[in-house]
Amino acid sequence: MASLTIRRVDEETKQTLRLRAARHGVSMEEEVRRILNDALAPARAPSRLGHRLLGRFAGLADDELALPERQKPRHAPQWDEPV
Image (cartoon, rainbow, N blue to C red; front, side):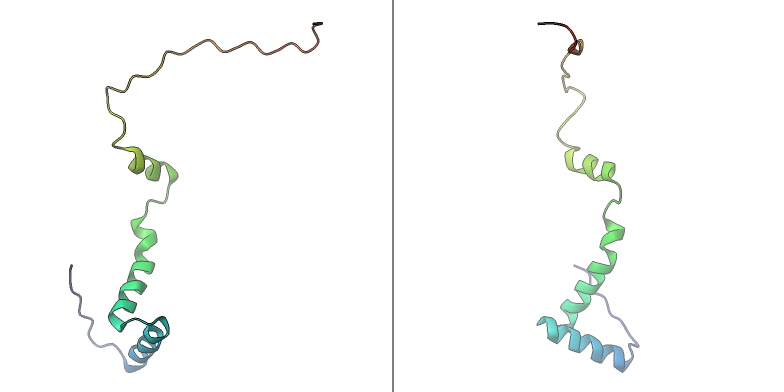
């Protein structure tokens, strides 16, 4: 994993971060990781359903996938014909 150093953070921001981390019961470092992950999650995730589906099922089919033959559709029932 990579390391990141942030310099010149004002004291008020640092204190607010310290209190927020304490409320969540984690270290300041873990709290910053969570904040960054939450902030960047929408940018990492595909926003369109098609992209998500393609990513999920990409390894399941290949060029050798045999599709069944098409059949003629059934005729719609005629409700006014006597039985």
